[in-house]
Every structure is written in C-alpha cells, then in structure tokens.
Length: 128
Image 1 (cartoon, rainbow, N blue to C red):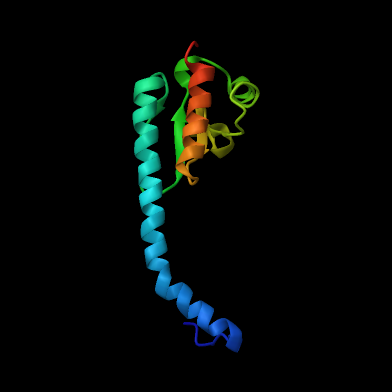
Image 2: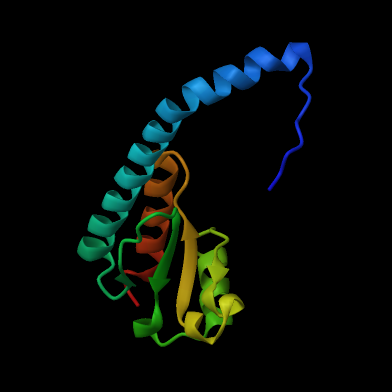
C-alpha cells in the first residue's frame, strides 16, 4: 500500500479542508441539477421528438440519443445538427460499432442551455 505523505503549503491547508467539508453539499446540488436536466430531456423528447429513442441514464451526465429512425448517415446527421441546430455533438460511432446511429450529448450544463439545445433540435428535426 501507499505509505507516503503529501505536503501542503500552510496557505493551502485551510482551502483543502474547506473543500472536503463543503464538497458533499456541492455534489448533492449537482446531482439535483443533473437529475432535473435528465427528466426535462426525457419528457421533451417523448413529447416533441418521439422518433428519437432515449433511455435516461443513471450515474452519468452523458446521454445517448438514437437517431436511427431518421435514416440519415452519421456524417450527414452531424452536419445537419451543426448547420441547422447550431450544436456540436459527438457521433456515437467514435465509441465503436455499437454507437452507430447514436449521438452523444452532455447535459451537465445550466437548464436554460439544455432547453435551448433541445428547442434547436426540435426545430431541425420536427419536419423530418
């Protein structure tokens, strides 16, 4: 096992203690924001973009959106999302064959940004 020690500057010691003491509250708040964003996204997609298949993930802020029902190749899909929705998202194929047809979206952001992004996706895909 590790038996070494870490030396802290006397100026950093209080900040480190404060970070550990207050980190639990911060984490609880962060989890509330992420859960709220996921619930919003789930409802939004079900109601406004039902062709996208989405399963709410647990324990992560990275979501996988299945666009395969649109029948658009990934490169065209990413271009459409960038050019029309003005969003830069990641294609699932960069994570392996199982990711083909999926787009990965990070929802670790303020809710108003997520709302704007989803509204842009709806505007782009609602008539396809």
